[in-house]
Image: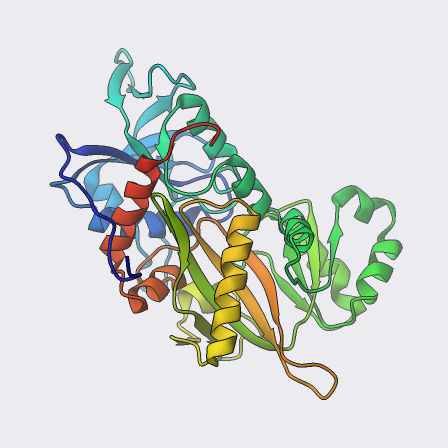
Length: 386
């Protein structure tokens, strides 16, 4: 089967009942909503019965009306409104594999069963959704879902342990230091000394966040404390990475029923307009990013990139999909250019203009086909341990 061909999809006896879950308690709430709006727009109503479920910032599950779900987009540079209890009827899912039902709770009414769900498409980014917590609930409930399971979701979300596992699998990563909150409070001088060994400039990031939230480029030691405190607004654990001089290149990985994972064409990210790095504003708001798709690479570089991406996907036991981000270091007289794995994202940005769908579109898989393909793959897998 070529990369451009969608998986065979036999005609169902009834519509597939899919819950699209989005929003959540993390700082990436709004971006998750934008992602969900895109996915909801391409789900074929002849094939799917869709339940749009938003999770509010305080953790409530809300069954949203179709018109509400249709407003999940960035408009004139403004992110969509946050989900709250006024967005729709509250729903719950029991951690009971014999039920697999959602229950609706409306004021003044007796709770009523909404019926079983065949599959969940969890489009949450960051903690309390992408990090294995939601995946654990769905495993307890015995409900199939798109994407990686508990372990790979949790490990890939935590940049420190992701790097540790990649190194243990023999994959190359850049130098870094993990900073835990207690360590920073007890002995900031020791932390600063460890960071200094990386060499400035460095990048300071929340260890378990995404969408470039809370990231600072720090040119010297005088800016370290403020950058750590900024990152800690998103996560008490922080990771500090040495700056890598080179090219930033991403590639998509997609799994299929009974098939080896496949790697897409890669893309190179080039940031302009005064941004020092690929930050939130450049990524989502002001369009100051140029993309080379496909990235200009030699055949040997492309082959090595794809092999490393698939190796990272399998080393972290990912399922369904992932976007693997790399640096291609600058070549020098002392050393040749080489690949470094930067991050593995088990639920990457998923709007049609996000990198993961764009890379697969360039590889011959349309956005709608990509969504169908992921749902088909999720339904082919057993729930629980596998």
